[in-house]
Image 1 (cartoon, rainbow, N blue to C red):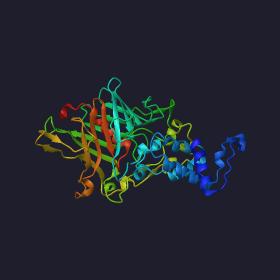
Image 2 (cartoon, helix red, strand yellow; image 1 turned 90 degrees about the vertical axis):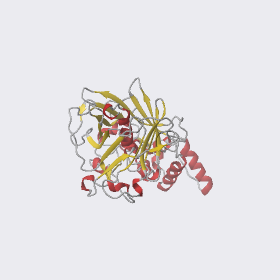
Image 3 (cartoon, rainbow, N blue to C red; image 1 turned 180 degrees about the horizontal axis):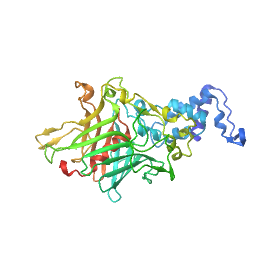
Image 4 (tube, rainbow, N blue to C red; image 1 turned 60 degrees about the horizontal axis):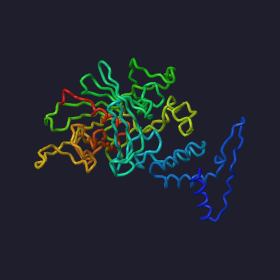
Length: 391
């Protein structure tokens, strides 16, 4: 807590007031011990957390914000009020941020590293504008081939990508030809989401998950690849139906469902941070915000490829990635909202997701509202599969 002490000392000198901090543990009910930081005055605590949140705005220093949320309940509540969602702050702070829509005003820059030998993929948040920074780890995925399909298991843990893990957040499943994919979320993307049964019902810690908190099979998007009419030099044709996002979300003032907490079965993945614990039996209802897609009259959000332009000098089809893509590849794509539900407007020209190659096993992934990092990562994973019928 050195950073907190420094901020308090700074506040002392500026306000000319004496703040006494007793560095010892306090005994509370049932013999439990509580840090002295829990008794900090509310106004002082809020000012301290506001300064930490403002000063530690990039990773790795931003880990101090996460640490503050784990001090005690008072710190947790105020930190939750101060730290804004990626939609407003364009920052990823807590693990749940990967399930929340990206920023409205700009693309959030990330990159994906591929390990061919282990068939694993790692998503990182870009820390600088350079394509060579180490990044902040966000998600990992492992490819698993089956007789009739292929699964990509997505996890918050780079070393544990199994369906039985508490860090499991969802999966991507393809058909036999690799032309159609379904993205599944481990928890409901919105109130009233339908649960899809399968033989691979997930177990957590070798115990059946409570039927009140089902995990695994909540379809949130369907992706299809069509015949490439532009030939081998042109990009693949993609069509993404976002089952959990209304088409009105891309309009000014539009809202997309947002997850605010992990469900009860995910609590144990963060044992040292009580920020992620809740004793409420209504955690599932409280962990969701935004409209119920099933009640939307204007339909679901549909994403499609942005049409490429023919470059006369290069004699090839080109897309402008604004320096974020440096290697030509059939995997490269940009997705925009389709005008299937109405007349095309300015919002349909904005790039919602772009993905492209910059090295042998290095790819950039940039996304924005209304999709999340998890959804964007899953869509990009579908591009890695070989699609015989499309090429």
